[in-house]
Length: 571
Image 1 (cartoon, helix red, strand yellow):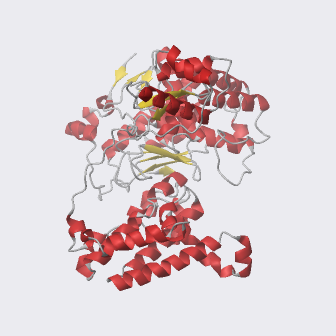
Image 2 (cartoon, rainbow, N blue to C red):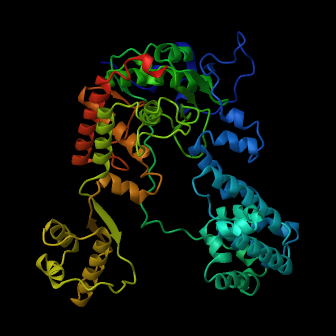
Image 3 (cartoon, one colour):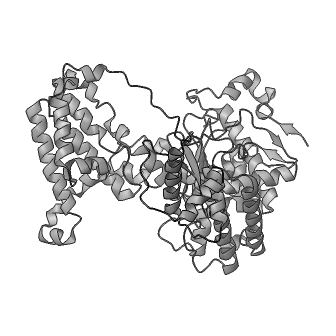
């Protein structure tokens, strides 16, 4: 087998001295001197036009109704784009001195903005309301240049927040339908709601006003000159970033059949190929060839026809044309396409195809009559998916989430007094296990004498910590609670809501399985998948083996059904 790196894709013959430039992928403005009617030889769109790209989005007024409609075609993209920081843009309290604000009033503006959530709830209606609420709040606060104007403004907003709260009461809305006009305020988040309409709203409300107008901090723009302290993140889970290969390395004899963008359509059936405006030809060629090789290896390892990679023409493929933020790649359910970013797309192709398969199998199970695009993972399949596939898939998801993982619990400081007085037998376990809380927890969990619920484990741990203090022993900073969940799932829960979504669990487990399958056959392709063995949010150790086995069983059932082998199933 031949081992190929990034440099093998950029031959001296084609690019001369630009090999190093192609490797670093410097941003260069697209050529405006088309040759033969086309400005580029590789980074050009072909096939069906894929809607919703950045080049389409940039032509729209940001945060307009039409802009919102376009971004909502990809909820993941919409979630990233609709945020407080994006909406505020240059409206910063520190700059209000230039437009006639007093120091105290500007500080009040800063404090109030600090109580607004960075993002709304992950829902299309909440995003629409959030845009309206932030724009309205920005408009009103832009006129609150003095203490009196600020107080008058927030008093008015407070009254409207109460109306917003009443809008959630059907009886009150029946009496006064206009209450619904104020519902949008609630999208700003819990903190600002508690400021205006909480059970003890008066106290934080007055506290904010006192801090802005009665403290030394609010005077003479002192607050604007303070340097931000370094945030202590030592106790938070490390931010994970996908390992992007510096060089794409491929060890495979499988020919891809791809030399130009049209070949991705001809060979694999994609309905359209799209490139971003800032994708120069060297980068375009790199992505086209790397992607073609990766699809060839994936089809071979899964033993499926190449056209089934695109689900027989249902999928589109984009390079550096869509998305925002730090995502290296993403799948858009609405447009049914995958986008790999220019600089960070390598290593993500397998993950995004897993999303595409997941969402399209759900639609297949409903004979593509479902109105809402959803993933098979986490949702009930329709009647058109054979039962044996559904059962194997359900078993796969169960294997991913269930297990004997340990949940990390950080011991609070100061240590609270335990609320429950547990039986002496549970207390004695700590002594019998040499005052080692983690060892005690494991042995207590394996005992058939006690049935302990998850919420009780935390309390038992607190009780053990108090017992250590009474014995004059050192209290640990954390302990681990036995659960019925897998370590893979618990890690995802600790990372946040995004990570524990079923379709994200499925995609990460799928790419782990594929990387292992490649290795077993002596194949590697770091553009297709890489980095799943370095810990992070991937299955590890015995759990990984069990999940891989469940994938193999599910895939055999899926293959035997010939769903992915027969084009007629997807027409």
